Length: 185
Image 1 (cartoon, rainbow, N blue to C red):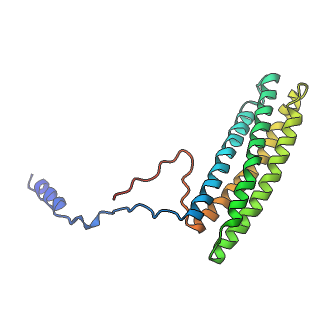
Image 2 (image 1 turned 90 degrees about the vertical axis):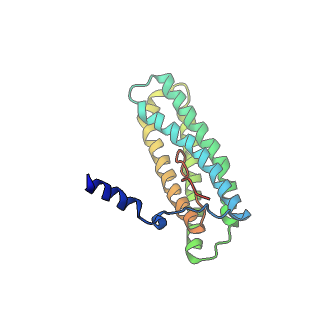
Image 3 (image 1 turned 135 degrees about the vertical axis):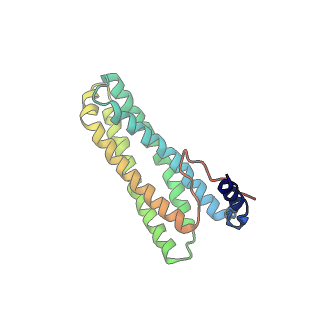
């Protein structure tokens, strides 16, 4: 019993200097905030492409013909919506004034990734537009999964380039579904 009391007393005597206080981040300047916002709009539109591809890849083997055609139309529409957001994001990235070599390299990589993504989404829209015709269900079953995978690989490459650029620019970008850490203040 004495040991227990001594142990509890020892724990209570520890200084509170070991506590960590997390301060909120400094607000972004207007240029970096508008850059972040443009990239958020693009990211949100790309989520629909990701979701459409996941649905197509999930059940292409067992889905009925009309269901496959519907999945192809959803994929086509998601790619078309995302293409429209790329020019705004690209302009925002090019307007950024990177002060360091690391930031400039990140900017160049992101512009290349945006251009590659734009071409991939245009191809996606074209391919899935052709596949969404009434007599193309078996084409969707045979080739849709591969085409969706190609778009997703370009999307992942863009996402990595975007993360690297934002990190270099000092812009915190919380992934979809993640909760920001709580701060003391």
